[in-house]
Image (cartoon, rainbow, N blue to C red):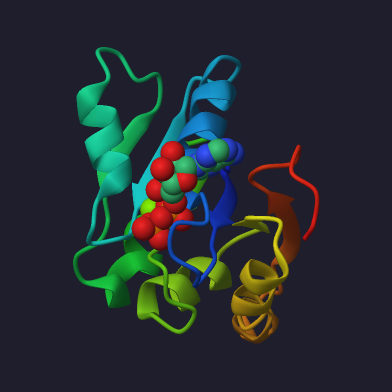
Amino acid sequence: MLNAHIITIVNQKGGSGKTTLTMLLAGALADTYAKVLVADTDPQNSSMFWANRSAHFPAEVKDFSQAPEKLTKRIGKRIEECEFILIDCPPHASAPATENALAISHLALIPLNPSPLDLHASLDIRETIAKATPPSRPVWYSTRPSLKHA
Ligand SMILES: Nc1ncnc2c1ncn2[C@@H]1O[C@H](COP(=O)(O)OP(=O)(O)OP(=O)(O)O)[C@@H](O)[C@H]1O
Ligand SMILES: [Mg+2]
């Protein structure tokens, strides 16, 4: 029986690299693991767009953006059949999708551009993560690591 590791990619700052990190990580994990699911919880559906533009995206990408209050239940139905579930969040710290995703996650990845303004605009997400039960483990991930801090 499989029991998915759930990773949420989150930051209320728009355009910080959530979808790009989600999809690159999903593709890399799918090289090794057969059952990788991307849950696209952003109504903008960028992960869905990415997958639909790919001839053979190696992971399953599914639209979970409708009825975010049902996210926990819907993800729960997939836990035993997946090895990894990656949740791509909308750019809102207190959206139901973000809060529900963090509550069921083992790990939270927070991509951000390495600038003081981007860091400042991203800090509120820590409170949402702190409120999540059980606690997710946040990891800050710079989307452009070669750039120096201003
Ligand atoms: N590591 C990276 N290096 C350079 N550019 C990047 C990197 N990650 C993402 N980008 C670019 O930054 C832009 C925003 O990326 P992306 O759509 O993944 O962000 P997002 O956080 O999902 O945005 P949104 O909040 O709108 O959902 C895109 O043009 C993408 O190509
Ligand atoms: Mg996105």
